[in-house]
Image (tube, rainbow, N blue to C red; front, side, top):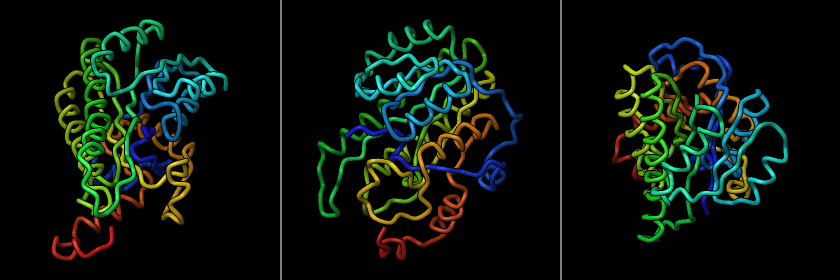
Length: 272
């Protein structure tokens, strides 16, 4: 199942968190975007981002595979343009991107929130599932973010946001390839940020924790879980602050730092 929101997990406090103080170059506060595209917009964090942006008065292009859910989203109100698209179809991206930018009257922000994380057992090694995750989580992100990068560089302004995950930080037993795809996304976004820094284009990496969605509904009690609307508010706050990397919520930065200090011979014994 293709989901939105990088494993559907997120949050972060309204003030500049420790993660930004420790990891970000201070940036000036920027105005809310007037025109945005959200990929992976049919549910979870992606849908919440579309709703939040539209509520702020932005014109939003909502892109996702499930057309029925997109119709429900557009019926909620605001200026929302919907397009059904499978992010694995990278060849369709240039034309669709150009069409949305034209109909929106320009573009200030692109958010890639689509993700695929099929159920994988601890003793399962399924190449088909693994390659599907690579196609969506990495291939889809690159296709859309590359298109936005070229456009924003030419106009010398714009903001790209990728929804990654705390799963990128260490090689966990439960989701080896999902975590690897998010680590690849982190690396790509950092390189894109460095490449576009002289063109006045911002790139933000969002690293959420657990978010209450259909995916997490059957996972039992989860630590630090928040709602998708709460995650969306914090993500847009990070955008306005010009954050480079934002853990959502802040406590996940602390957890990540702690896990990063655990030696490999101990980490491999942990049930994570």
